[in-house]
Every structure is written in C-alpha cells, then in structure tokens.
Image (cartoon, rainbow, N blue to C red; front, side, top):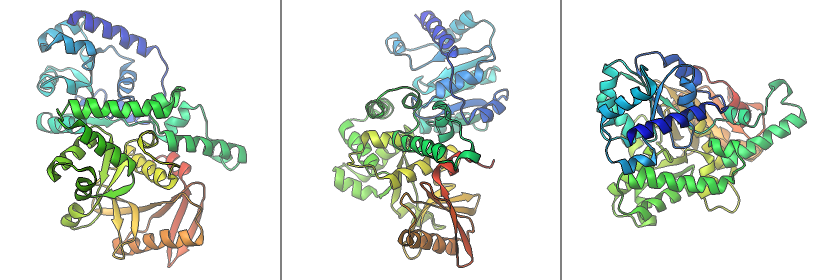
Length: 427
C-alpha cells in the first residue's frame, strides 16, 4: 500500500516538474538557505503555491518526495516512519534531500523530522498551519529551521503571470498606464491566488469554495470544532468587516457566541489557517495595545470579493487590505513591526512601520482623488502622528496620483499604489 502511494506520488512529482511556473519573489531568499543544514519550512495558506515553490526550488537536484495530504492515506491508517523511509529509498535510491508536503497532517511529525535532521538529511517541509508549525518548531527545532512564507501572488508575480511587462519609463504613456490600471483593478478585486490568476476560472466561485474548504479542513476538522456554524459565521463576519475595527465583546453580541474565551480561540484558529490577520493599535503601553480594538484583514483580496456581501466594492478598503498583505509579504511582521495608530485627537493612521524600537514610516491609503477636504483629513492625521511619534517618512498611497505635499516643514509623498507595489523593498 505505502509502496504504491510513494510510487504514485513520484509520478505526480515528475509530471508537475515538466510544467512551467511563474518565478516567485521569495526564490532567491530560499535558494540562499537550500544547502544549509537548517530545516527549510515553507508556510502559507493552501493553494498559494507552496508545493510548486518547493518542487521548483529542488528541481536541479535529486530529491525524495512525500505528500501527507494524500486522500489515500486516510484509508491506509497510520504510517510507520521506518517503513516510510524504507519505501522512499527503495523508490529513489541513495538520496539525502527530502520534501515533505503538508507535514502537519502526520502525528508527531516534529519528532520524526528531528530524527532525520540528526541523521544528516536535507529537509524541506511545507505546512498550511502557522501556529501548529511555529509552536512545534519553536519547541523541538529551536534555531535549526528557516521559515519561508509563501502567500498568494504579489503584484509583480501577478503581472508576470499576465505576461505584462512594465517599463517605468513608459508608464506615463496613456496606453500602458491604462492597461496597467486595468490589471491593477483586476488584482485589487480578485487577488493573487495562482489558480485564479493563471486560469479562466470564475474567481468568485473558486474562492468561495476554497475559503469554505480551508475553514473546514484547517479549522473545523483540525481543531474538532463542535459548533462549525458559529465559526463559519465568525469567519464570514470578519471577512465582511475587513479593514475595520472589532472587539471580542461586540462579536459576542452580534454572533451570539458562547464566551469571550471561545471567541478568542476561534479567531486564533482563523489566523492559524491563514484566513485572516488581526492588527493591534500601536502604543508604547502594552495595556493599551491589548485593550484597544483590533483591525481585521483578509489574507487575499479575492476572499473579500468572494465572501463579502457588498453591493459595490469599497475600493478604499480593498486598497488598504492590499497594502497590509503586501507589507506582510515583504516580511513586515504584524504586531511586531506593523500596527495601526490613533493620535491623541483620535485621528487614525492606517499603518505605522517599525524597525526594532524605532517607528520608521507612516502610511495612509486613499482611493478617492486627494481633494482639499480629503487632503485635510489624511494629512492632518499624518502630521499629528509624525509629531507624536517623531517620524519623518510619511506616505499617502493613492490610486494613480503622484506629488508632494509640503506642510509645516514636513514633506508627505503621494504615490500611486501600483508604483509602490512594484518597488523592490530594501533588504
């Protein structure tokens, strides 16, 4: 039985390696660590391209492959680790590099992985559950692993998939600018899940099914949640209120949930499955960070369009969600390096970015044309925050407007969202 599974998976692996794929932004980073003796852990939501990324990463060397998400395994009962390694070597020969896909489906996987690591195997693992992996990795593999996060396509990957080459010199030409903004709108509404971008699937149908499948597989089934309707309602409610503030108390009232601790637990499950992120308010006082409302964001804009009950999309909020996910893709860690901010006068700044203990940038997101009224509102919030936090770098990300605003000795950069999305972040 196991022999057949290994053999079938080898055929699938070889077939996948014959196809062509979109280059991912994280490839150079991952390649840098490939020959180190660290365990490479590729994390991210299902269907974001983790398996393909890992296969492409290893394609120039012999490697063994086993996928723990194979449906046949559920009917096969438990797998003995010695038996698995015997069958892998019988199929692949004397190979010391192994890719284990969706490792979190294997009970006590971390003990097995630790043993192989001690025996000198070069290991690449993929997993769809942030907390399960990080918790167990931190406990058992401290300092011996390198996490690599693969989220849905960023905008440069999206443009590569659409075969659109951007030449910044020509981006001022009406035709190229028009085409670029058309693609930007597509990305804003439908997001970057690879299958949505490269195929002609109906994005709404595909993403609605995907969201519900992730909810069932990675939340209800994994955590044995009894009240699956409640957690489904919570997920749908949070997606419908993306880029807005929430409190656990308010969620309890609206959704008639059992208790605050159950609600917190459910939110954590949704975050672990890479469905949502929660963002804290920035304050030097930890009590204020904990007690203030949190902001919720979806892992991908496509989930919002698929699940949100909206008559017409709120493009300002969609832009804000996109900026949040892009910052995460750039390695800015929510609630460590990334927060929202309220000034003393209760004016909100969408994002503050930190490096170490220092706040380095303030970012506002604004879809509508920056008229004098809008300018007053956005600029006043930035200037107040800049004064309170002693930050010089201030950016307003717009749909397609580029200029500087000079006020009270400060300079605020207005930048088109597409331009900001395509810039290479500084290492």
